[in-house]
Image (tube, rainbow, N blue to C red; front, side, top):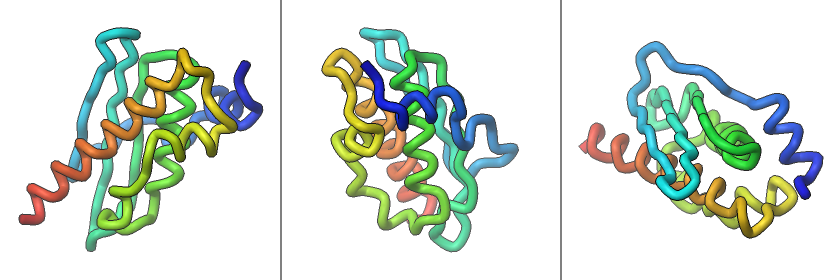
Length: 122
């Protein structure tokens, strides 16, 4: 049902935890399935210096959040807007249709972070 890559991210999540003083933090939930994702970043000089997540959710939600943090760590904040749920799902080896919401939740959290960062630098 799930790829080895997805299971690895679930069993060994990358960047799980909290940041003491993030420059931006969001918490989103999916009211249909109940998944909750908190994403936090520390941005310095326009780059993601640190990223952490906490997730209460299904296997796919945890794996998607873990992969997302790997994708954005160390990158320029201005380069992150093009990350899509399809890209996350593909990099995890695909998601069952019933789990597609997990990649969408990760991308929505990223978009909310980008909106907060944009407001804080304006």
